[in-house]
Image (cartoon, rainbow, N blue to C red; front, top):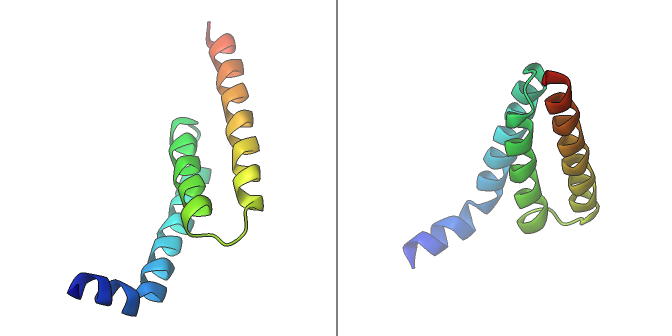
Length: 81
C-alpha cells in the first residue's frame, strides 16, 4: 500500500519525467537517419496516448505515422535491392 500511496502522491512528477524522456527521445530520433528507432519511438508514443494522454486524436495521428513509416521502409527496401 505504501507504493500505491507514493505513486499517487508523486503522479504529476512521474508523468512529467516520462514525457520529458519521450521528448528527449523524439529529438534524438529526429537526428538519426534510420527508421528502426522511429518505429520504437512511435510504439512509446502510442502507449502514452493510450494510457496517459487525455485526448485520443494523438492515437489516430500515431497510427497514420506508423503507416507512413512502414511505407517508407518498404520503399527503402526496394531501393536497396
